[in-house]
Length: 333
Ligand code: ASP
Image: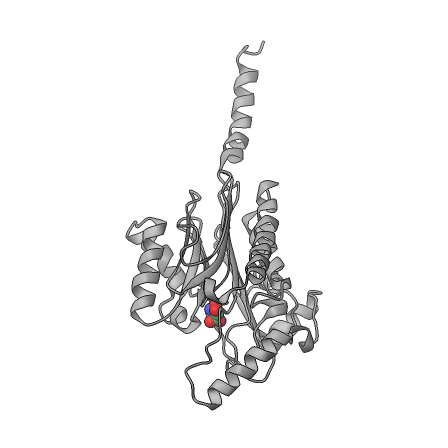
């Protein structure tokens, strides 16, 4: 005869992990680039359009988490939406290099492994974040560049597009201005916000993920690779500490390995996520003269969105009902 309490106990034991999992907070944070984003320079129509673009990415990624999907799927979905939106500097709207071509970089990292995949200097990949993910999941490597990355894309049925797909009128104009500024030996171009995109997410299973995708810098040298596809520089995730996606002056992020540094401060100096982000952006990056920002998430769902540039396109949504979108320095204070 079975014990009368046994079925209830068995039910509780079976249900407990599911209940706990269902209560685990989920969160998604995105950015659409940091830079000279000021009210005085923005028309109401442009502001509304950026807000709509950020909102669409935020909701696409959050829908994945809400259905119990993984943080990896959530960051991929959010970044893909921004890669397809020509107002951001990634995918379709990527800025052009000195030769007039888009040269794309992207990385994704799964904090549960940790596992990572990245691509750099690709010219024909419609959604570089998907290729970065394939590198992580279908190859023994972390980073593939140039022709080799595109050959890998072909082998895996990734959508490839002609170079003209990325030559939008706005980016052609910006390149022209940058070339003129260069010819006049003016300080690197006075280009506005670059619009790199990124996302970090925490899912119901407690896994963190980070993703970043970019065209890099307007008028950059052929072959220049930024921080976004370099694990630890512009992209990093580890379930034990945090997930980070950066944007801004890539060379500064590379030299000081800033994304990893934030998570290291959490791990080794036991700083809160906010403190670690503040120290890295407002002390380390600031001290060297670099400009930019990061979005970050920790395993408890704490969110950080910080920058030392005039503004940063950004948004966050979580299971506590928060949904915010900002762009200027004084938004979301
Ligand atoms: N960090 C990117 C790069 O240097 C550009 C940006 O985020 O503005 O490639």
